[in-house]
Length: 235
Ligand SMILES: [Zn+2]
Image 1 (cartoon, rainbow, N blue to C red):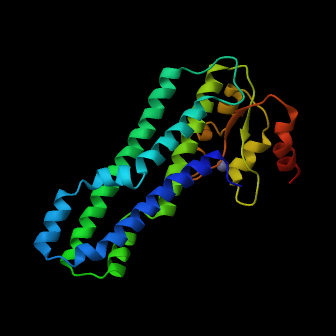
Image 2 (cartoon, protein in one colour):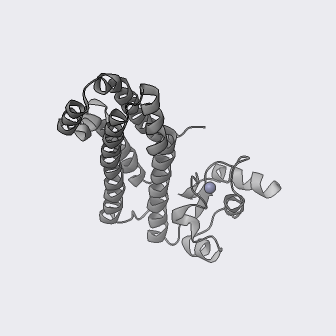
Image 3 (cartoon, rainbow, N blue to C red):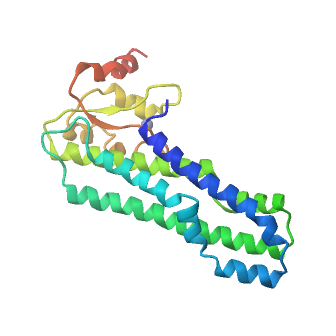
């Protein structure tokens, strides 16, 4: 079931996909020009700016930043909030990484476009070259999703450290793709930070148990949060 993180990641990868489609649709006009003219045109195009402004990558990035920032508001709020400075710094690193990725993608696509023009490639060949040499939209989606979730885990983990008395559960779906480690962590139920560290699963609290892990610590405030724990213990 898609949650807020999935939706923000989806919006971002959709903007990326429409950028790629737009670039491909512009290729035939460029490919018709003599090589020197095409090279000249490509050199003068501020491709990164096009990518960011016209293709909406900056706006999608803003959406991601908002989604990240929302994770700072830990739900439910613990008695002591973790340091906002630390969290803001971590947030900035995430945004910087996504920003760098846009710059790199823009440069990479421009390079492939020039190479394809010189190689007299068809639109389909150019599209295939893009597909092989750049991130696919689904890869962008999972990359961004992974970063959003890692950030969320960092925030919750910092909150748990700031509130050593508070109990935390390993929150997230319990289904047929939940990893064995996550099932085991869900089974443990509500523990405080020190107990989590002593449980043998402490190293997963920020990183997750694997790439794409959908789980995070969440403060335990009501019995209904232990539904998954009950189910996991029964199995
Ligand atoms: Zn997991």
